Every structure is written in C-alpha cells, then in structure tokens.
Amino acid sequence: MNKFVSRITVLSLVGALSLTTACTTQNAYTGEDQTASWVSGAGIGALSGAAIGALTTSDRSKGAARGALIGAALGGGYGAYMDAQEAELRKELVSTGVQVKKVGDNINLVMPSNITFATDSADINAGFYKTLDSVAKVIAKFDKTYVAVLGHTDSTGGDMYNMTLSQKRAHSVSAYLSARGVAGNRISAQGYGETMPIMSNSTAAGREANRRVEIKLVPMGK
Image 1: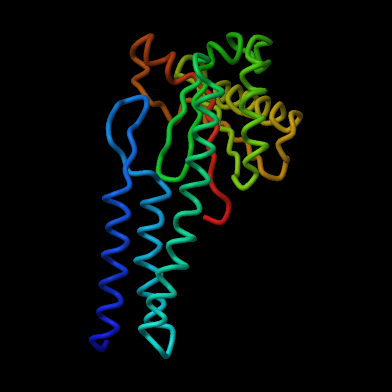
Image 2: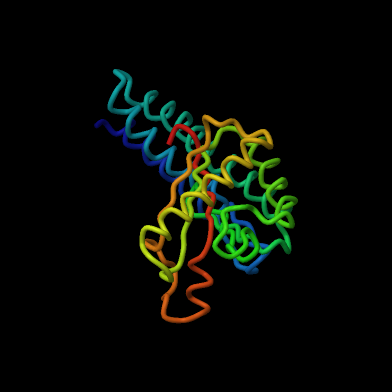
C-alpha cells in the first residue's frame, strides 16, 4: 500500500476513533457516561469500510475514503435506529415492571410472569393488556426489527409441563402483539421451559426471576 493510501486509511481510523471517544452521552438511569450506539456503530463501520474500499478498488485512496463514509453510514444506522426504539420503549414502560435491556444493537424486554400471567396459566392477565399495548405500539412503529418472544419457567414441576407452559405463554404474547398491529412475519415464538435460568432455582427469589417472558428485538439485515 503506498504512502497516500496509508495516510487516507490512518485518517479514516482517526476519524472513527474520534467519533467513539468524543460523542458520549449520560445514561439517565445510571448517571454514567456512555458512547451512543450509533456512534460506535459508525466508527466500526468506517474502519471496516476503509479497509474494504482500499482493497477492492483500483484507486485505493479514493476507495478507502469512500468505503469509510459508506461503512460509517451503515454502521451508524443500526445503532441510531435501535437507540431511538429503546428510548421510546423506556418512556412507555416506566413503572410497569418490564425491564428494558440494551445488548449491543439488540433490545431485550423482560416481563416477569407474576405480572403477565396467572399461576400455571397461559392466559395474559387483563391488567397487563395496557402494558402490552404500549409495547406493540412501539414495535409496530419501528418495523425494521425482528421480534422473538421467548418463554421461560423455573424448575418447579416436570420438564415437559414446563416446556409446554413456556411455549403457550410465548405464543400468547406473540398472538397479542400480532393482534395489535405487529406484522406476523416479523414475529417468532419459542418456549425454553426451565432450560435457561437467569438465577438459581434454589431460592424463591431465583425461581420468581426465572419465570418470565422475554421479547428480543433484533435489527433486520444483521
């Protein structure tokens, strides 16, 4: 690679790193500084785009520069879109008992079963309809995401019973979302029974945490 190409690539790297270090926000819930997802996505995209552009075009300097710009746009797009969706979900779900967790570009909504279903039932509690309506409203608006509804139980009861119950609960939530305007071809439902605990089943608090339905939102195209 000639000196000019190296210089372009270095400039792209510097620009990308500047984005990820300079553009920070404060998390309203923890008070900690954090890099916005769209910024880190843009930085990673720029780095990848510069490298690919330099290697795949005859004019490597132009290829690196153009690739950095395209990569930054594409990389930033997922993060910005999911950041906006996360913000609306947090606003809609304040004080509902539903946890909103951001993992990379994905969003996880964790709904404890004690507010979602009656004991040993797959029928959604009527008091939870309003919360699910809020979830459906946001998910329907942000229609560039896949929606995976995942059911989980604690270890009380038989394995087959727990698996069946978790599947029925996942399907109940997915059917409700579909009835409230979320396109069915975006939604999948799966029950995992007691196979994926998030806490120990040896305590009452752990079993309560393990009884849950999660909605995982994943940007399309990933």
